[in-house]
Structures are given as structure tokens and as C-alpha cells.
Length: 159
Image (tube, one colour):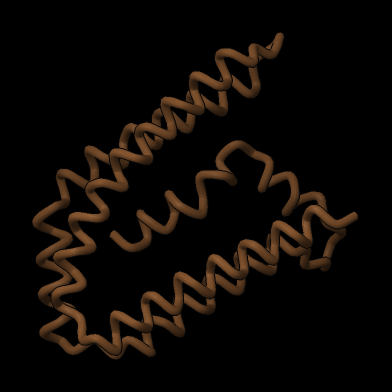
């Protein structure tokens, strides 16, 4: 569940192909800012998993929460995938059609918003299982991730 939400939040901008171009455009052996960000994010997620030190009971309860929403998660994720593909197709169309691209983007945005509503519901249930310290660690992780995204955007925008 966490992987799905993280993929939707961080990965969707990459779905257009722009991120892939930035990653593959680097010289062999060179780690550009986007690749460095993604590698660092993966490492930080592993560290967070360790730092949270979830008990077996917490892990069981969190799994039950996610499993109880499994069909809702799939129902929310499917339109994101479909609308993301439609946006990619609109971007790749020739001749380009700005209105079609914007419409596809709006459709994707609505699907992401719908999934966000579900994510908030699940988040509320999941956070009730965590200690205040674990909850703070999650907040700190999100803040650090936001800060790193801001830094990445500044780096990419600087020639």
C-alpha cells in the first residue's frame, strides 16, 4: 500500500517519459540529480522501515488495514494507470493537440485526487496503530522528501 501511494505521488511525473529521458541522458557511470534522488529515496525508505521498529502486532494490524481496503486500492489505482497511459498517448500524438493533453492531464489529476481521498482514510486508520514517535518519524520522512524534491527541482532548473 505504501509502495503504491509512493509510486503514485513520486512516480507519476516520471510516467510522461521526461524523467526517463533525464535518467538515460546522463553519461555512462554518471549519476545525475534525478537518479541520485531516486537512489537516495530508496535508501531512506529502507532506513525508515528500520527506524519505525514496528512490533509484530503493529505489522499485523497494518496489514489487516491494508487488506481490508485491497479492493478499494485496486479500484483507485486502476484509473491512475489508465489515465496516465492516456496522458502519455496524448503527449506522443502527432500532430500535438494541446487541448487533448490538458484534458488527459485533468482526468489523471481527478483520478489521483480520488485515490488521495482513499489514502487519507487509510492513513487515519493506520496512524491509530502507530506510537507518537513512529508518527513523528513518518512526518519527518515526508518533510525531508519534500525538501529533497525542492532541491532537485532547483538543481534541474540550474544550467
